[in-house]
Amino acid sequence: MDPRKNTARFYDTVSHPINDEAFYLEKIKSLKEKNVLELGCGTGRILVPLAKLCDKIVGVDYSQEMLNVCGEKLAKEGITNAQTFEGNITTLNLGETFDLVIAPYRVIQSLETDEEVHGFLETISLHMKSNGRGILNAFRPKISAEEMRSSWCKPDEIIDQEIMLKDGSRLVYSFRQHKIDKEKLVIYPDIIYRKYLKDILVEEVIHPIKMRCYYPDEFKQLITDMGFTITSLWGGYNNEEYGVGPELVIEFIKK
Image 1 (cartoon, helix red, strand yellow):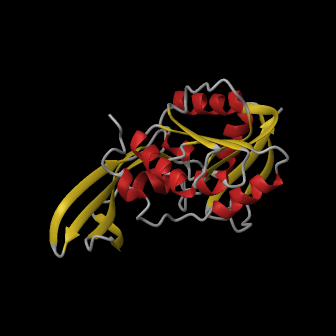
Image 2 (cartoon, rainbow, N blue to C red):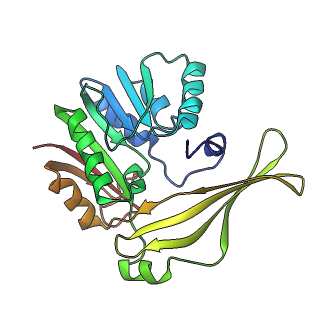
């Protein structure tokens, strides 16, 4: 079953706390050859604008519903150099290599087990050209691991955004912080979409997600342990220092 079947249509209505589009566009401009693979491309938030600068871009996602939204955007823009596939990014083999492999918006954090993470990094290595590059990111936790284990779970639902939709209804976007794996430091929030017509609730969708937390040194070690060489580090998309800014962004090559 598609885990995003009931939520894909809401994804682009909610504003996301990351502004990385310009960062990736600059990366594309710096490439001599511009064949790109995006793992976890979703609705094409990054794939669609990048496609306009690429020779070829391929997007893979586990959700066909998200890919359907992406396909609609590509068709609307008249983009013909993009392909999308439904697939498992931890076991993927497309039989081709790319100049740049990316997985924006913390895709790696959705992988819960060590086996999934290892498989995902193997997927990146398999699809990188010998002179290609990869870029991964995660959020930088604002509190220590000890604080995370003791205080992340909270009893109350937190309302994050309220959005007026084109049909005149109101979408309330909220989340619950209800579960944590203290050993692996994986958090399990529920994302909740409630749609109201005036004050009447007409739809409610709950989407459970998982996010594995990484601290700065740990994230670097994860990349180098897989045999990659780190070439650049950023703490965000506004030139923040790595380990200081809100994000952990790493660019790397094969050894």
